[in-house]
Image (spheres, rainbow, N blue to C red):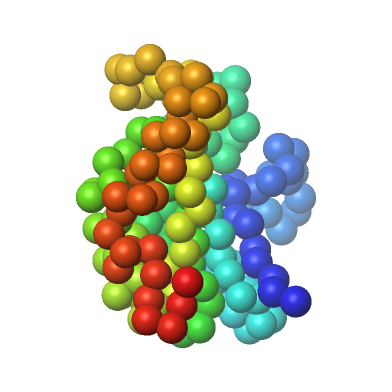
Length: 163
């Protein structure tokens, strides 16, 4: 069995800040993320995963407000962990293949081969406003994703001996 921790900050439960031991100040908080990653690694978890999204605002889940850019955070966590896989979503609808492949390849090199890419098409139409674009329909997003993954340099999507 493989175990992963899906980290949403400031937590998955919108009322979690009420717990007496909750960290409620200084967000975003690199020290807290390092603590979570170290705890997961000590507990023999295989992966630290960050979902990403572009739609944000007061009506959204608190995890979308004031958070780290995932690959930057995972690169920082690579310096304080040694075996924990470091994975994040990467949008094929709102990114360019070269740039995203370069970012994940950098994380992979920095972490010694521990990077993981969760390919997503970004389902929320309101995300398009961040980029000044129209949100493509479902079938078009998946066609874009297929071409995106095909054109992504293989060094960013696999390693010798891996798939």
